[in-house]
Image (cartoon, rainbow, N blue to C red; front, side, top):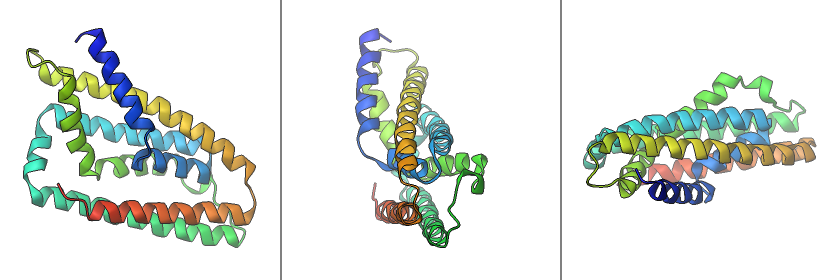
Length: 208
């Protein structure tokens, strides 16, 4: 691949990652609830999920997902249910914060945060369809290694996403430090609950 193509892809990827979306909002919400480390681990989980989507797109499996309404509906339904579950958990965290039991990163293991990130990403079939539409635009039709080129582009997307997600986590973690009162912490958890519920509802009614 030519350097100009890689740079163009990187610029487009950065713009897409910075634009408000489920993943960066998810990272910010976790960081504001539990701090920078939680946001960073969540980012690692999300980017691990992106590896799966990259493989699916580069191997052409996304096309099967696009053509199968049943599979698409099944995956998005599970994803929506999981997001609604996170909304309920966040609501309970908000109630705990009001009573003085302010949640912190220790109450939610790093592995749990990592797993949340993976599931949040993998259970959104729209990501696979996005990669299927986005990656080929930067692969030459004359390339003899189309699948490899797509996989490399996917890895570039993942690296820049991890860097930007880490910056989002750091900023949100700093904001969290400034607001430590019970009411503020509770409001953050309630806000996160609403965010998860909206994302879950939006995913549930998404069509191919």
